Image (tube, rainbow, N blue to C red):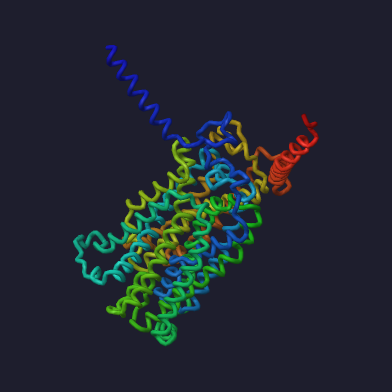
Length: 561
């Protein structure tokens, strides 16, 4: 019996030791008297010394993000629908311009109070309710992570053919039902492994990587465009004359492209907080992207449209994704090593760019989310690693089978996130008037300012569900051939993001007009509390500067021995 108790004690000791060793640092600002359920080092407000992102950093980051294969694919995929080049490009850019405004707006709270999305969500959703918003975003981050990694893997496959031409002859050993070939799976695994290694680096420490990425990828895209324009003798847009569409049909196709443009930026409307929290000043995240992102995203989208139109003229069908574009280029040079090297650089640059974007726009948000869900044992870097692992569990190649499927995926991506983004926007600017009590964001006790009813602001989840209902049949129809709906319901799905966003925003605002909030901040002047916090931080910094000077003066005044 004594031996058994001794064995139990040893096992308990080992288990307690393992749990303690897996705990992450809990931070210094709000741990005292606060349950570790609500705070750790990554959930606490970013300290002043870590707010290093200036206007130029944000401009470089968004240029790097916009110089992405996703923007190229969204543009070229709209041509596959039957739109002309200028209609496709206009739809995407109008969506990106409006989307940029929404992105900047949802980054305001984070740039003023220096907290990430999971903590920002507590204001409008409640302490426990924020878990619903966090979980919705986390699931989508996993899916998009897998898609980008597969996209990079297809480009890795092109790179392998550039190095070893015989790689193109490797036989497929996988069944047709797998939806992927042996070569494609190999490229995916290589891209995934490189990506997995980079997850150990915090995205905020990769700002120079993104600066270099923006230059390298734009150069590669210009090279690809120049090759196609020279090969085709320019582009003449045969689809303008050959495709006869009625005005109504073309208008709804334009709306589908417009909605897909929102899908490409929709995640950023909720992810922005995880980046804006590192802003040196609030205006840095504003002016660093309000003009830069629409301009930078216009080029890849235009390039995708032009190359898709040129390939349609040359081969009778548009090449809408970059791996097919670079593969077709490679097929022209079976024995030209110089040309193969150039294509290797182009495909490799874009593959690496996709991996870099994955880190900032999927892994970082997912890391923040799981850090909020499991604050004792998860931080951002561990979450990044887990996100990459879960990216293997989905089948992204199914999503990227054709242009229509890809656009449906983009639209659905934005559709699910639209209510979350709308609620946070309306709550901060029109309900809270920019006044957030930071300490209360870590107060999980009944009676806390953001506790609401049992930790839930019940308005947020109810409005989210109600806002999703109108476009739900259309969304199901776009992703399944077994769903039959009316023409009007199908057309409604082409408005999914903007319509769902507008419904959620108006319903949330109206709910507070009918049932006003029962608690209020001491002063309703916009961002009054934020200004006080900034003043206190400035005073502390001034004291830190003056203290060494006073120490030196006291030493000088000290009489010599």
